[in-house]
Image (cartoon, rainbow, N blue to C red; front, top):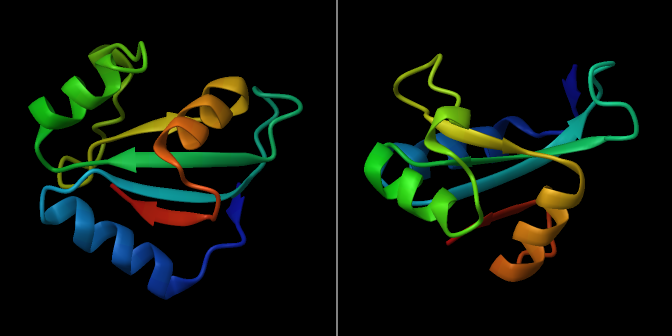
Length: 98
């Protein structure tokens, strides 16, 4: 279950993804499959090759890409990997883009 995100934040993320930018969106999230994780960061880009290359720099396999909505392909990051990526990207707020 996702919560703690404002409509305009989601709209901005979607627009940046559509423009082919690597876009970041972090929101609160609860899923019993991932105990102890309370947030998720969606890292998206319409350019799948660009997104896969970006993910590769962090050890993310292209097979892990969520492409259920083809206009918004993204990686879901949580836990230690989320923290690692956000720190390396210099993102210390809940919404950012690279």
